[in-house]
Amino acid sequence: MSKKHHEGKHEKHEDAPYRPCVGLCVFNAAGKVFVGRRLGGPEHVDATHSWQMPQGGIDKGEEPYAAALRELYEETSIRSVTKLSEVEQWLSYDLPGRIAGEAWKGRYRGQTQKWYALRFTGADGEINILRPGGGQHKPEFMDWRWEDLDAVVDLIIPFKRDVYVEVVKQFRRFAQG
Image 1 (cartoon, rainbow, N blue to C red):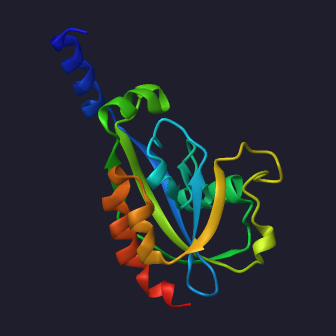
Image 2: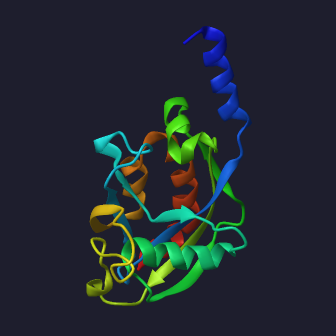
């Protein structure tokens, strides 16, 4: 690949829009948050940092909070939640170059996310990551656990770290249980 062609490809990603997305910080009664270990995908190439909180894209015409509840169900089967708060501003991250070319067919430079804090009001038996959404959705996580909020920053893939630092800061008050 010539240098000129490579530079043009790089610029393409810098000019691409962000993918609208939601993120979910789900607290249990003890003040711990749900994290899932990703099955894979172009964004998740580092086995050490393969844990994340649920997140997903917003469909055209869909309201962000409705997307948040839908994505949570599609990834975890969780429906028993109450809304605690949301991050006022949208938080964005860029995908590293090679990953930006593979994820979403290179159409986006990264994601801009609306984050919500939710309280899980159900029993752990409601959570089903292997047959999420009543078995109607492909699993995205291979494992899950309740984790201390402050620990999630070190579990996330590094290019999402700044977003997680802000989410932790804004939602720390709900980690008290």
